[in-house]
Image (cartoon, rainbow, N blue to C red; front, side):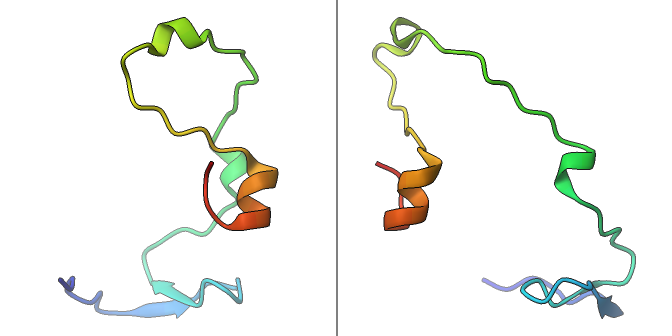
Length: 65
C-alpha cells in the first residue's frame, strides 16, 4: 500500500527524519504532549490483553516484554 506524495517537501532539520511535507510544522513532542506517572491497578485490566512497555527493556532488546 502506498500513499500519494505531497506536492512539496522541505528539510526537517532532523537527520533521522529527513524531508517532510512543506506544510508540516516541526516541533518537539514535549511542547504538546503530557505524561502521567500514575500507578495502575492490575485488577482494572483483568480479562484484557495488555502490552507492557518497559523503556529500558525496549532499548535493550528492541521489543516490549
